[in-house]
Amino acid sequence: MSGKWIFLFLILIGGGIGIWLLLSSPVPEGTSALSRAGGISLFGYDSQGEVAWAVHAETGEMEEGKESKLSDVSLLFLSGGEDDVEAACDTLHFSGDEATLSGNVTLTEKGGMRLVTDSANWDTTTREISASDVTITVQSGSITAPEFRYQTDDRHAVMSGGVQATVDSASLLTVTGNEAEAHADLISIDGNVRVHVRDEEYTADRLGYSSKDDVTTLSGGVVGTFAHGAITADELVIRKNEISASGGVHISLTNGFLGGADGT
View 1 (spheres, rainbow, N blue to C red):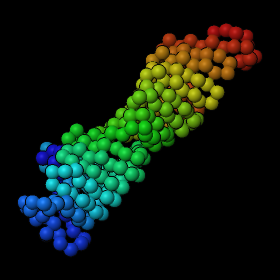
View 2: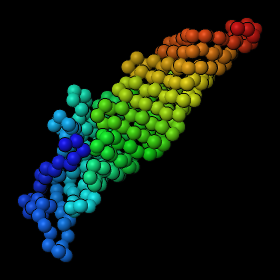
View 3: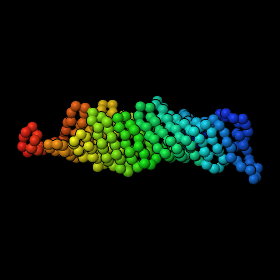
């Protein structure tokens, strides 16, 4: 039953039975099968027969064998035991197992990320929502990317095409990288990572941030420069009151650091 549209019409206008019969009965030649209804609910089920998602719309237009349209739409994605994910949009067009959300599209995790965009695609079979040129906000930060994909069943977001991010931890970090992932309270940014924090700049292969612990970890060929020197290491951890490094650490200090001369 996965990926199938299950319809339940809660008709707020007269003629509900007539509309249902119109959708399921042959249409006389020369007439249109277009039907309009108010107060519409649609449900999708997973392979265990549990409700996987629900769609509610104020009004809708449906025509047999063609793309249908719902207006003033709210969506709910459920995954056993996890907090529900909510979405909303002005209109939802659907045909078969695919749908397009348009106009004031929002996607919100309870206590997690929030996406706001103009348009998004939803594949009910793969349970994936995708969008282009998005900015998502997460706990203590935001990420902007050309491409966005989100799995509604495991609450996993992937951004690609070159990302820009801000992390408002102990100090404000601005970050760029190739791609990013967000899941629960963890954010990771991979590939050509560059970080600016205070008057310091770091490059690394990967950045990981935990909003729960407010800890940022840089790993893989870390190189950093600051006012009076530079550092290289395998890993560098930025916490609220300290920065620590490990693995092949090398620090170079310039004149002016504690009044000392150049050295290592």
